Image (cartoon, rainbow, N blue to C red; front, side):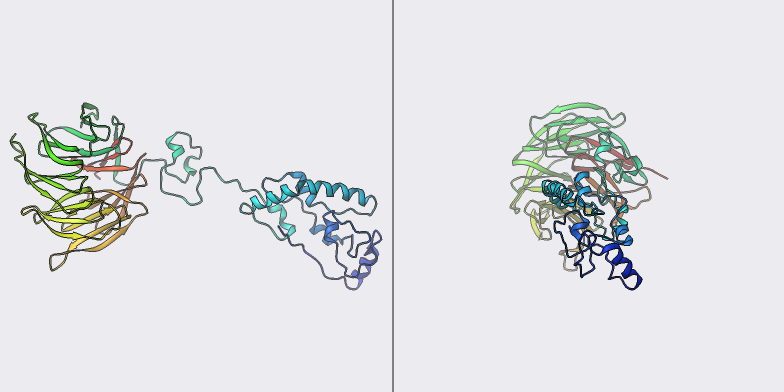
Length: 472
């Protein structure tokens, strides 16, 4: 590391005579023709006698080279710094003995100095003006304080060990936003929650998990009232009226929560990852890329009949949603969205707007929203010729896992967007104005809207969290 030294020009006039009287060659150095001070003498390392440079200094130079504090080098010893910045002797007596001792010390500690300077080059700045060396101070960064404040929950706060309080740049809360609050945590599942449903007139919240169970929760007390062990992973859950549908490997299980009737709908090959029901129709999206459709009567206990098998996707189905005009939309791991007519069971359109897995679909008014692992939410609208095109694309920093929507107490439409950074973003439509954020310990795989301003999240740890909007 090179540190520049302030130097004065050659003495003029009286100053020249004073300089001469001080002894341009004090200590026998009379052949000095350059009037420059020996930099090796200043550091105590000059071994030449006589030396063609001066071994003395004017008061000004002496002041410049006498900092009140030694400069700071990270990881270096005080002895090394002291030897490096030692001023030269005032006379030539015993110079050789002193220099030999200093030289031995420097040789021993030179590798340490090189390592210290190398390691500290990014941690401290060199002050070129030696008179300001006393202002050099050590920077001690806080261990878990980031260089740039990030909008995420402080992990130390979660563990109860954060010591920075209000000064911590991370959030000490599980949500950010106005007009809603965190109401309750429902703990019971020990693996990811993959579906949440609220059957009509049941007064129970149903959740399905990768741990192979369905749990029923009392909507008033938040207590788990029943656990059904299915013996296989639950990939999806939905409800229509009093009916509860559960997607599992190679089967869809059906319960009537009012009468207690139970059915198995067979025909699927692989895990059923998506379910959608409407107009006495049940659609199941399977891991092999096939969509199965059953017809039934929700108001009776009559069994469901397989009506159609929809083929077209080349990879597993991840999301299903029914829109207006007898349309069924399906998202897939093949990065496409297919549009089906659920009256004649034909694929009428394939949408190729995403570059990664399409994880979630949502219909709002006359628009289709799609969320993908390519970190975008795309808004699709019909053209004059009846096709669908992207009219807006919203980008996130992380992949999109789930979408849903509802209105707030002011009847403003709110989009919920779960991202792979363990947070759920709330946006006011149609402008995508930020309305807040929810945070979880693990990625939120499931979002569900409830009555009375309630909304629910289910994360990969198995935790269900209940939120509610607050009326003015």
